[in-house]
Each structure stands twice: as structure tokens, then as C-alpha cells.
Length: 398
Image 1 (cartoon, rainbow, N blue to C red):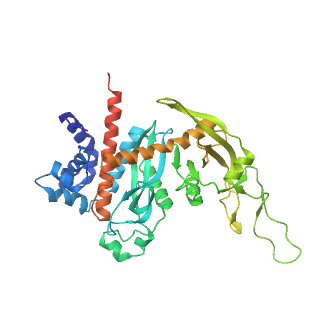
Image 2 (image 1 turned 135 degrees about the horizontal axis):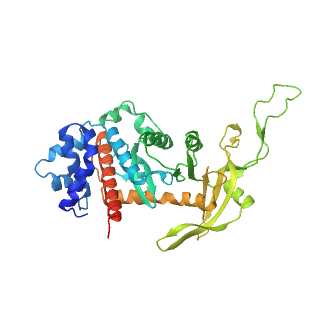
Image 3 (image 1 turned 45 degrees about the vertical axis):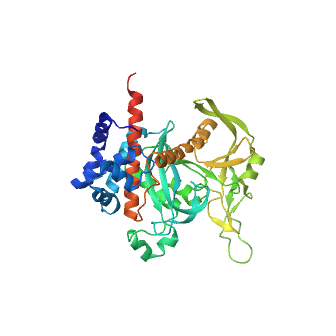
């Protein structure tokens, strides 16, 4: 983006609520400059290029503000949630759970480990951020990016102390971080209708159950081997035997089978159009059927009782591959609504790509917990400002 004087004035005005919660006047000075550095043109958005663009004569201060200053991100993130909700929030919006990787060299940066790196499509040395994106009408904006700490880090307290990981941070799997982040953004007033997640989160029964316990609708990717019961499966307790202890384990009236097998037995594929795209209607082949996933109590040999009813969906791609999903939308939901929710998840990937390529989300070169999360929240603010510009320009008269 090429900043004009008017553009800079709009940024200063838009940032006012963020600066109001930063407190210290030095933070109120350096936050806009760092965000400006993220927005200005340039191939690298790491500390040195940003300092040379916006603070060539006072480099140490802006570095201190991001990398070592102790300001709390929570009040800033609350303002961000309010801003993004004003632009995108509502019952027709989606909250998308995903994670995004930041490739790294060495072993000293906080949270770095040999783990799956989506940016490279393989296992690699990287940091992993659990991501929450609010999206509506193909317009996404981040409302949460939280570092995942592998157990190799949380089990090594000395290693955590070297990079400033707070003492109260313990190991949490990604699905647990995601639920905690959902609680946070809801408490901040973010409004949405459905939670979406890919097969990195969807196969986790605890994650799905956590969403349901919060009264949320969700649509998530699963694996083809997920065990499934029919919607009308019955659960009973066997009658007592003549001898021996009474039975305590309930049993299901049928055996579950894999999602892939279930679709072949109980559903047929048909073409569904879920919305109009820029180049015409968006359509695909889907098999959709009501079912109950086997994700309740384990009874024996790893077999679980049926959970709550949901939509089981199979998407058949043009090359013959299949993708599987579960959605707890009401039984009255149309095939179009179910499919539209499933297909809306892609916009978080668009957000990740733009945040990296345009704003340098993955360019931070510091090692500390504090520095990384400061950089991340300032990047999210810069992204939200770009969305604000886009929306206000679209509303402007021709």
C-alpha cells in the first residue's frame, strides 16, 4: 500500500482506541510507527527493515517496544475483537479455527520444534500458532493468534525461562488452546453463527464436545475412519445375568462402521450449489446424511457409544478423492446451508497468506514469548485496518 497523508490520518484516527489501552505515552508513540512499518511496502517486515523505514534515528526504542517491553496484549486484543466484530460480526458470520506455521532456523526461538509446517507442506522446524478468524462474505480478519508450545518446551522449565514464557503457561493441546481462545473472543463480544475447523481439529471428540457444550453450531473436517452409527441407534443396558455381577456397561443396538463405509451404505451423491462465485455458481458433489459419531463413552476394545446426532458429509472431488465432515447444524438445515458452512473455511487460509506476504506475520526474528506475541497482535491490527479501508472504500459513492 502506498500511504498518502490522508491514509496516515485515517490510520491515526482508527488506532485511537488501541492507544487508549496501551497507557504509557511511549507505547502510544511506538505502536503506530510499528504498524505503519508493517503496512508500508517492502519485502521484509522484520525489525531492522521496519526500524529503517519508520525510526531510522531511534532504532532502540521501537525494538524495545516490541521485543522486551512488558505491555499486556489482552486489552489490545479486546479492542481488536470489538473492531473486527463491528465490521464482520453477526449470525451469518463464521469463526474459523486453524493453525499457521512460521518456519524457523535453530532451536532457540520460543516454541520452535520439528512439527508439521503447512507453509512447506511437510514436517519442518517451525513455530505453530493456533488461529481464530472471523469471516463473512469472503472477507476474513484475525481475532486470535496464540503460540502452541510443544511438550518438549513445557517440560523444560529452564528453556522456557530463557525466552520469557510466563510461569503459569503449561502444556495445552491445540484443541484446548482453540476452545480457550473461543471463550476469550466470545467474552469480548465477537458474534458468529457457526464454528469451522479442518481435519486437524475435527477428529478430536473433546473439541467437538467442547463446542457443543458451549451451545455452538459447528462444521469440522474428520478422517474417513471415524466410526459412525445410524441416527436411530438405540442404547440399552443388558439384563442382569443369573450369576455374577450385574452388567454396568450400556450397549448399542448396532455396530459402528467407518465414515467411508457409512456413506457407501446410507447415502448417495448429488450436486449441490452453495453460492454464486465471481465466475459463476459454485457447485460440487456431496453425500449428506444424518448420523451419530461414535464419540461418547468407551465401552470395550476402543469402541465408543454414539454421541449426539449430526450431519455426516462426504465431498467427492473431481479426481475421485473424498473428504469427510461432521456438522451439528439442526436436522432442518438444508444441504446448501451445510455445504456453504463447510466450504467457507478456506477464507482463513487467504487471511494467513495475506498476513504473511503483505504484513510480515512470519518475519519476526526475535526469540522471546513477549516479542512474538507483541508482533502477532500488531500484525492483526494492521490486517484489520486494511479491511477497514476496503469496507469504507466499497461504501464510498462512485
